Length: 139
Image 1 (cartoon, rainbow, N blue to C red):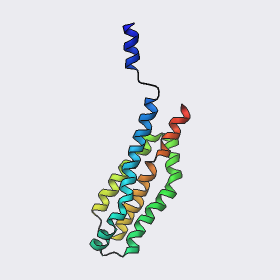
Image 2: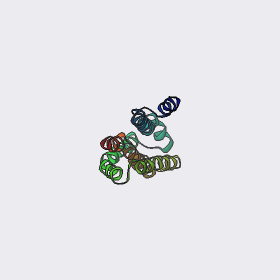
Image 3: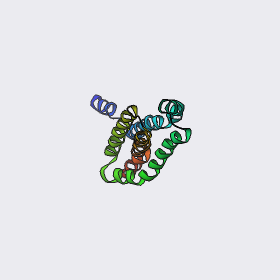
Image 4: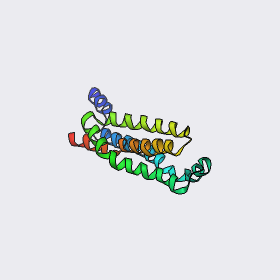
């Protein structure tokens, strides 16, 4: 009887793995989307620091949204073919590199490349849609 109780206690409930996967995916999305969506806070400092106009600075965010829209099918295909781990790794690495490059930027095109394209690609790769469907289809 004791052996049966120990085995039962050592096994996690059947629902715990799906909950952990969804919670982890949501955590990644919160971090990446939170980093991407704080751009509005930094518009005025970017304008003042680099002498840019409001339209030029807001265009960086628009470029990021365009990169998300264009990159979505590619990120989905990447996650379908190689799994969500690779998509998340690429997204996290791209986000880190994008913010590192943005911290060194001195011109508009550098910010467009780093914050526009880089953050857009990272946001696309780290999305809940890259993780949950593949896991839930197999269960």
